[in-house]
Length: 255
Image: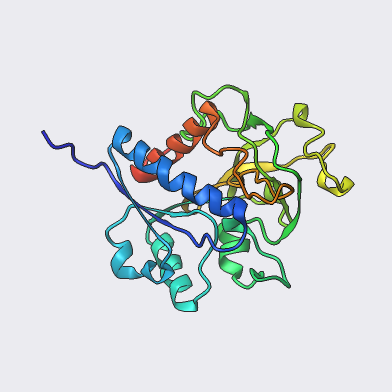
């Protein structure tokens, strides 16, 4: 008997520049199809951002941004329409990056300042290490049933110009627990966090979306092999969080 798919997912990626992001994209494009078979959804992925259009999006309940965001004004407009009309989205790590000047400037105000609420990138930890996650909203479907704290897979962690805690549209689901500190190993002192409040997973109450700060694998840059040294989908509680989020988004569930 053929199983009917509960929802359909389309993932977009670039996978061109940073080997850590390329590694994560390849890992995600192996992991999500495995989850699709277990949880009865379909998963397609593409590096053609022009597929982010009204016609293609009409066939999908959830869109993923694995490692970037679109640059074309027409494609950006199509994504805005999709979200305003009730579409669902999950983004990982570099999908929220914006820094002027850089190859990914802060030139999409709706996406970075309204939709994500994070604004521009400010700094990051280094090198990729595990953090202790603290669940801030245990009643949300994305975090329901997870331990109050748990250890994540290694990643590089970003901080932002936008104060997410002061944004009434933002529901912070997971943040860095104080037992994580010091977080990062350097070598630069600025790459090690010793204190502070850092949201890592959140949703915007005005949209059906979830952003996850993780998605940067550790890479052997020093040895010049570019070998992958860590996996993003290697923490069982974190993996559960991702699947809770995807199922909540795909089924258009309420709180």
